[in-house]
Length: 200
Image (tube, rainbow, N blue to C red; front, side):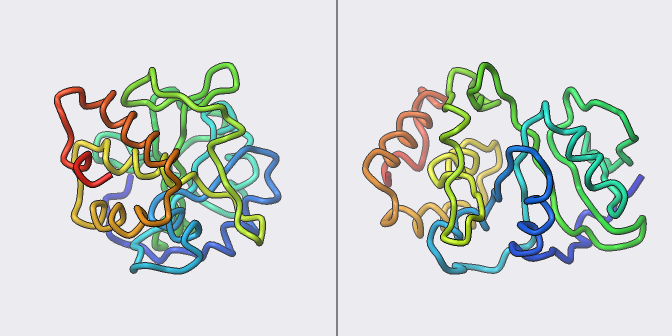
């Protein structure tokens, strides 16, 4: 078990692309880096780098990474080594490092799907076709659509100052249908209101 949650030396977007493009799964960059890939420039310093994969493709991912990386399950405030062949039914976050004493290099986030649709875990009626949840840069790097990434940020129980800044930076770059979708989904998750709705 590890507890050094602040011990990060993230690898780069390019390194993530080289690593994951050889794995036969659906994947994309998530988090703040996904928003910056949509912008085409880096808007702020990022503490880590996140990759989204489908829950049902987790063992394929593990088998391709485990020869060169150590993968830890993040559950209940603890980081516990993910064992070979172990299918994770409830774990949503995996932290990845080169060794038991190396800094964390990247994080893997597992998402739910059903009948070729992505499911938003916090409000399961919010769904998108699986083929529509990622966009690609000119270099073919897949990343989570900005309106979905902003929903993850705005839908959190702990909205950070940087999340609101990300929203402010991204709003001028969102198409009207992307704004409409983000507004609709936040209203569905928070029927009594949400602080972001006045801005979108």
